[in-house]
Length: 221
Image 1 (cartoon, rainbow, N blue to C red):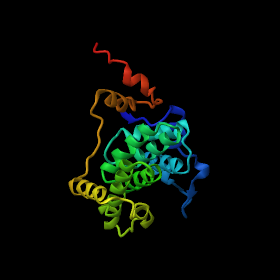
Image 2: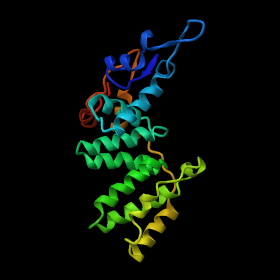
Image 3: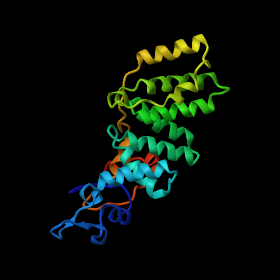
Image 4: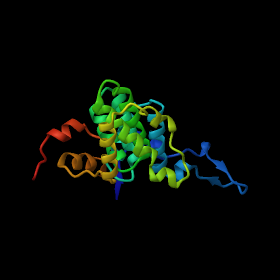
């Protein structure tokens, strides 16, 4: 049986199991499964994102987020959180790349993050201001948020109000009118190898070294 691997075996056992001492009993005295017991992968997924949002980007969190992020569409939350952690660790280029993958798929939180990122870095960089304004406006009209009745954070758009030239504003509108969702998937050989490394037969194991996977040619025999 193939299992999706998220972390080292010890972490997987800890995260996906639950002791009876932490479980409650119903009126008949039977143990009631916890949420983690009923949905271990879902609990691990949500928990890793929450840790990243708190700034807890330790190795265990990074391992979990990486394996979820490489699963592609449907895991944009992990892609966004992984990007935030990479930026926190000083790898801004890779971090922005992951957040852009989620934002291009229509993930509102990723779009907001990019807008705020470029608002901070774009004070003296016109191209960054254009990027930031684009993501801010896309976030403001995000269909997923609006369909749920959620009002986008108005402070995001305010950061760009009155700061674009006429030409820059036209560039932003042209990009908005041409935009459509794009869903990233692991298509390159290095990306496929990283994704495959998170799947093993019958037992979990730790995510391997990503740099080694990207640079070592596969053995065809």
